[in-house]
Image (tube, rainbow, N blue to C red; front, side, top):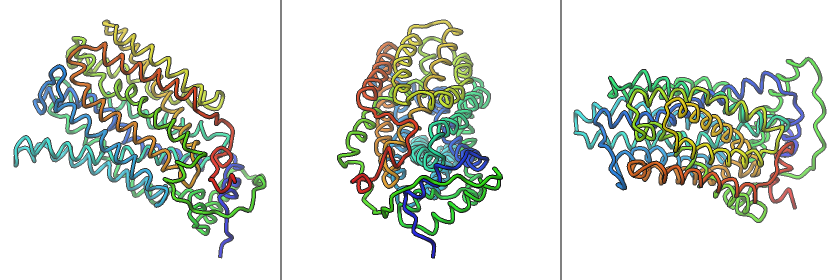
Length: 474
C-alpha cells in the first residue's frame, strides 16, 4: 500500500521541480483543448452579422429585445451554467475527467448546431431551426464556460510555483491564436457573397472532439487534487511518474522538497469553504470583478462587427477591419508571460483596466478605417493581456479543495453579465454607440477600483501558503 501523502507534501514535491519538457507538453495539451473553445467564442461577432445577412434573423430595432440578442445570449447562458455547475464538479470528479468531458460537450453542441440548422428548418420550419440553434449554443457554451475554469485550475496545480503565472499566460498565448484564425475563417468562409455558409464556422470548431482520445491517454490527474480527496495511491503514482520523467530529462537528482507539516487531509464541502471567513472577501471581490470585466471584454470582442456596421462600413470591410484588429491577439498573452512574474498581477490588472477604458472610448469616437483597425488591435492586445493575467490571478485565491468551486462560482457571474449584455446590446447599438461604449469603459474603471482596493498580492508564493484550507491555517 502506498504511503499516505498529505496535500502539503505533494505541493512541496511539485514546486521543487525544474521546468522541463513534461511541463511544456502538459501546457500544450491543455492549450490545444482550449483552442477550440476560444475559436467558438470569437466567431460570435461574425455570426451576428452573417445570420442577419443570410436572412436567418431579422435586423434589430432601437431599444428592442431582439432575436439577435437572444442568439448571442444563448452561448453566454450556457457559459454561465457550465461555469457555475460543471466547473465546480471538477473539485469532486477530478481535473482530467472534467477537461475531457467538457471538450466533448462543446464539440457536440457546435456540430449539431452547425449541421442541423438547415435540415431542421426544411423539415419543421424556421422556428424549429432557430430553436435547435439556440439549444445547441447553450450546450456548446456550457462546455466553454466550464473548460475555462478547469484549465486555469489544472495548470496552476501542475506547474512549479515560480512559473505559475507565466505558465497560465503561456497557455492563454497558445489558445488566443484561435482569435486571428476565427477572423480569417470568418472572412473567407462566410463573406458578403455567401453569408449562408455561416454554419461551416460552427462545424470547424467542433473538430476539437477529435483530440479527446489523445487527451484521455496522455493527461495525468492533478496529484494535488488526488491527495486532497484521499486518492493517495493515485497521487503517489502520478508524482513518481512526473519526477522520473523530469529526472531523466535533466540528468540530475532532484532537489529535496521543503519540509512540511504532517497534517492529514480533511475533506470539507467546497462551496462552504469559499464562504468561510478566510475566503468570503475573495469570493465577493472576484464576483464583483467578473460581473464587470466581461461587459467590457465580450461587449467589445463579440460586437466589433456590429459596431463597425453601425459606423457605416459594409459587410466585407467590417470583416477586413476585424481581421486586422484580431490578427495580433496572441501578443496579449505573450505580454502577460513577460510581465506577470515581473510585476504584481494585482497591479497589472488595475493598470490594464484603466488603459482599456480609455482606448475603448477612443474607438467609439474614431471614424477612419485605418485608425479603427489600429485602435481595435491595441484594444484586443490589451484585453488578452488583461485576460492572461487575471486567469493566473483568480486560480491562486482559493485552496485546492475548493479551487474550481471558488473560480467556477465567481467566474459564472461573468457569464451572467454576458447574457444581460448580449440581450440588450443590439438595441443599444441601434440607438447609437456612445452609450454602449460608455458602459464598457465604466465597467473597466469599476474593475480597477475593486481589484485595487480588495485584491491580495500573490506573486512568488506557493498555493498552499497563499490559499491554505481552513483546517491547515488553524
